[in-house]
Length: 387
Ligand SMILES: NC(=O)c1ccc[n+]([C@@H]2O[C@H](COP(=O)([O-])OP(=O)(O)OC[C@H]3O[C@@H](n4cnc5c(N)ncnc54)[C@H](O)[C@@H]3O)[C@@H](O)[C@H]2O)c1
Image (cartoon, rainbow, N blue to C red):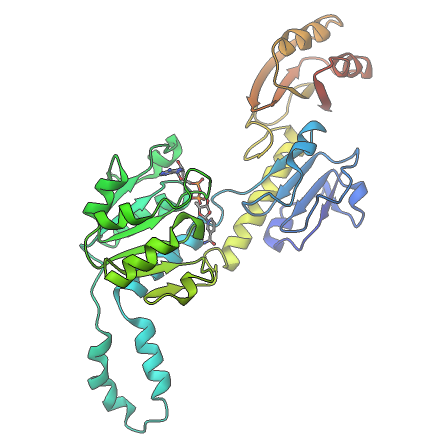
């Protein structure tokens, strides 16, 4: 029986996956698995029982990752679980920029008391006319979980889509519609497109990625959509581009004190992933990742340990070893096992940064003596046996 503690409310559809091998507990100290959303774990002690922390969401700055890694506690997150939610709001953003929906709605509110509104609407509406997105060119920067969804959907809506991502993953490339035209640099993307939407992480290298140089290369009256992070856009350059008309509209899910006050900014209060479905997807993904690890030792979507999957644990014993990523560990592991006559049926070893993880299926049950032998290897943080 595995004990699971929820540090935040987790969507029921995720908790419903926990079968009779699991029980929810009140005491954090008793838990082998922790499910968490935004609760800070920095002040909590990482108990001896704790094996896995699954964060229902993407950001993990509420969890002490390195400390967990050194104790062999695997931290999972749920990348891409909210991609559809963000994509749908990007589509809304495209339409809000193309048609003056906001202006029109505001006009109706302002004229709600007008007895003849049904007639005056027909005269007033020409002030809010727009254009269609079909046939327009959309540049997508970053073709990860969200960017691919946006690109494919825009193509399905009849837009001509261009994609820029020098680091695209194999998975990203597989999922991308063949209608999306790859471009080699931002200059080409900017000069070609009517709309640009950015879907890259906020890092030192991507800070201010959308700036004067990019705007200058765009057609007059272009549109920028930012559903990633405000730091990706240079605010001063954006203000100048909006003033000059180079950029007609800036749609952002991350308003700040500068952009919230700029003309022709359509600002949304970080609603990209604020859907019941995104929450459900995150909960299901987090619970599934935690269960596969607790039951089989498999790791998918961990932020502090490498991905490693040997399927369902069916051998007499499955040994999970957490160690520092240094040479000669495998030799020491196999020596420790062969010295007591244990045969390795199957094995996988993966590393990520400073940490490495090994899964070994053995034909024999594993005794405490074997576990102690492996633990005695100085670079080994933890040994777990599923049998
Ligand atoms: N609005 C919201 O509510 C919301 C919700 C979730 C995520 N986000 C934001 O969206 C971003 C993207 O999310 P995701 O799930 O698609 O991430 P992801 O990791 O799946 O994809 C990011 C992509 O950006 C690419 N990339 C990195 N640097 C690049 C560069 N310099 N130029 C071009 N491409 C580059 C990567 O190769 C990758 O394919 C997140 O980092 C986050 O900031 C916003």
